[in-house]
Length: 216
Image 1: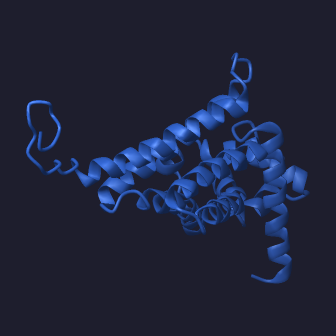
Image 2: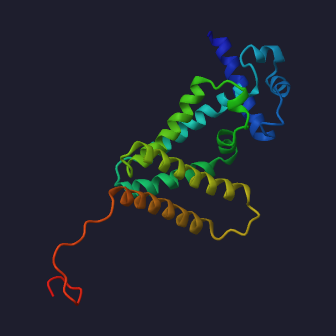
Image 3: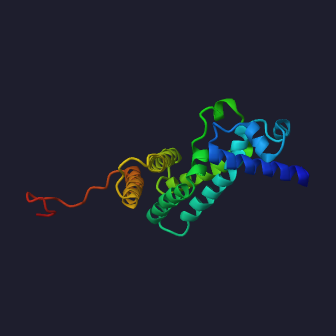
């Protein structure tokens, strides 16, 4: 791709990103994007087949940044501390830019079924979710159990973020108190899954007398 075509492509992506964030994905048409970018619709279609392809391009840098933030949270700490830092990193990243979080993770339901997934977009989303798998792997050696744990962590974090961001009218308790409690629950759940995987503790040795004390 020559420099001029690359510049045009980047301009279209930047324009689409701005309009998606200002107006919403569903209400932004390719015609509106083309007009805002100062090009014709056929020119836009020569770069992107539809706005779903544009949505993926807009979201790739966001997923890559998320993956980097989550990966950093896992470095240089014991697993419990890493889990706490990881959860806070996810929540903070989402709260710093709710519109991009919405675009990236609240995708149209028909994206997978009706529109092609670009390889770069698939790689970026996988890179982000692989960090959640890394976290789960600190607590679960079994691959299947780790995958269950990873998906459970993600649904817990996403649920908290989505509700706090998009239900501001609800009478929430202090936000930091709620987040701290939620993170503690997730970490304890991960720790509990490790204990369950290890099996029951071995019984203590020694004969017990009538008092219940060993050797009595």
